[in-house]
Length: 201
Figure 1 (cartoon, helix red, strand yellow):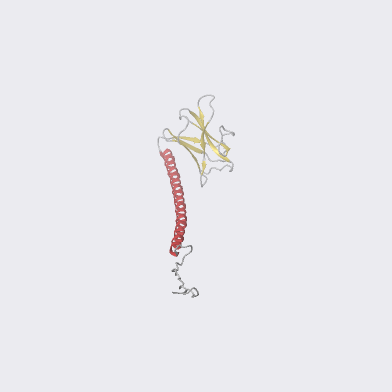
Figure 2 (tube, helix red, strand yellow; figure 1 turned 30 degrees about the horizontal axis):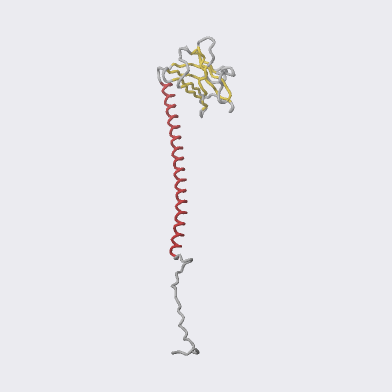
């Protein structure tokens, strides 16, 4: 039994050791690493998807361009075949179109009842860049106005060709063919005297 004056024995201090986690705020380091990898993956996936979208868009645009070029080429080939068919067909009626000036070569028209009209000439002087040669159908009916049949095309080598796939009137209703020089883009009615004229008989 201890007296009041005896000191109480000191108890040994208890120390609790905690194993280091190697993390911040109690989150393991591998979780932070996984989160960072996930963010990087999302960023890469977004950039990769944008790249793929751009490549697909460019591919579609290229395909559309190729399709348009093929369609234009198909149309040109079809027109060239039609021109050749009209010129070579014995059923086509040939119409001489002498020039108003003796210094300018004559032109010639070929009119096929089903295929249309071709007007062609060689060594034809090209009009100024702001002008164009326009073909007209002159109706037989009295008082009728000339009907535009389109612009002629200046081709390499001095040739000049015009194709009229579907004339507005028939050959029997046409008195003459005429070509005038008009502003680029053509006119609703002739604004100058004909440079070439050919009667339809």
